[in-house]
Image (cartoon, rainbow, N blue to C red; front, side, top):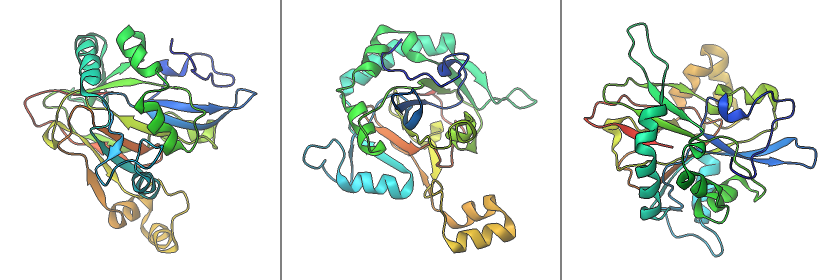
Length: 272
């Protein structure tokens, strides 16, 4: 196991065997209670946003962190060393084929994605990558989470095979039941592509600003008349990750509504 994994109070099994989201960094107090989480979907991570260079002493540019706080999403370019991510990708390629589990299939058998749980347990190379608290992944997660007191909660591989349908819209925090169990927990997710890809392979898309837990009066008014789903899709801009390269990272808040497009390309889409 990776050192620093925080146990959930009263949990009957490690969370990485039961979760529905990527993997998270969690802040634990002296009593083991969960306070702040940064969820990481590991693949390759972009730590300097394309908007500008990182500020003094920081991995991410100050305006990139501000953009993440405002939008609930940040696409960071060329953040992780390419060779390091390629090593992780090469190691996981066969393992994700062997251990991936079909998820969210319809009556006709067409699925949305394949999950590979707890990828750090499948390879020492991946475990070393995830456990290195001094690498750019952890340092960027700390900047976005607003604390350096982080530990890894979950990691997972995601594969969209050619022909897989669109992934349903969801919030990762809700998918793993965090709001009811731990209402003060906050998460940050890092989706890391394991190969170059464009949107035809089914990259992630987001409703920017949907992570806001205190929406304005106009949003509340529209929601009161036609429901929250109508309000979100009518008022919030949509952003689609595209033209991802090895070394990029797509970050999102655990409360950001997002999905992934169908894979209409000729290759699989692999990420962690």
